[in-house]
Length: 303
Ligand SMILES: Cc1cc2nc3c(=O)[nH]c(=O)nc-3n(C[C@H](O)[C@H](O)[C@H](O)COP(=O)(O)OP(=O)(O)OC[C@H]3O[C@@H](n4cnc5c(N)ncnc54)[C@H](O)[C@@H]3O)c2cc1C
Image (tube, rainbow, N blue to C red):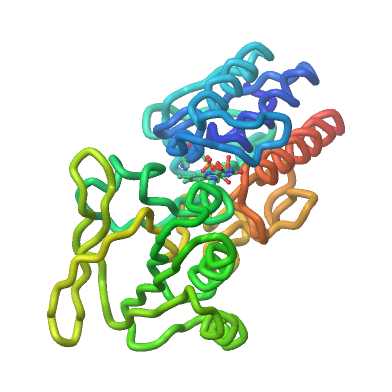
């Protein structure tokens, strides 16, 4: 019987493990694929306070070591669901069932991808999913934003401040984001729009050179050169397996505020990108991790 079972070994889950371990709690972390979470896909992180520059892997490795140094056990397993049984929680994994007095869901979210060949290869080296994270690497350069909803428009506004040019490429015949953002972008000389077009290919052998797009009305294909593209076609929270256990909002995020306590049985907490919030970054994920762990510790101590 563990005190706390943490689902997800990203920055949020690992931070929870560090805090819970230091409070002498017996902790198990379940991770389905990558110890360290999404940030391992980023070759350069420059906005994490206290570190001028580091790679996502470097950061993730240190956090995993820190969690283990505080006594956390880590299992490679996918959590399929949570059930309450005899006052404790059973987390059903693909490989085993784990029992704990409390559970922290820290499963993160994934940016929807284009699902094109070479996307993995160019991620962080020409293909990005986050202007706040990577925009500064493209100052003075030509970029495209793929998408036409609010996220894409917000990313475009941000990028247009320092990039030489921003081309917004939307699959539909119009933009679907807020009118205010559209007006703001339309006033900018360095922003242009391409409609009814989908990206069909990422061009470049060893380095990213641009994209091929196809017009969905005329079927015409065009090659365009860019220094980088920002894919903003939505995010997918990884909460599907817990939808009967915690309340999810309409976009699939666990509905919870700064307390990291969702609407659910007492003893379940949530941390990081998988919860409803405005800013999804390492800084906010680790903040949640600390808050959720301390809340879980208080809950266990009150049993
Ligand atoms: C390419 C890229 C670059 C980025 N750059 C920056 C940056 O420069 N600065 C910054 O602050 N942020 C950056 N981010 C965002 C940052 O990585 C996230 O905000 C942060 O990782 C969120 O942490 P998390 O722990 O909440 O979730 P995640 O990092 O998503 O971790 C969740 C973990 O849970 C696991 N998991 C999911 N479901 C299950 C399950 N059912 N069972 C077991 N395990 C499960 C996942 O495999 C994952 O490892 C970047 C993101 C990407 C993709």
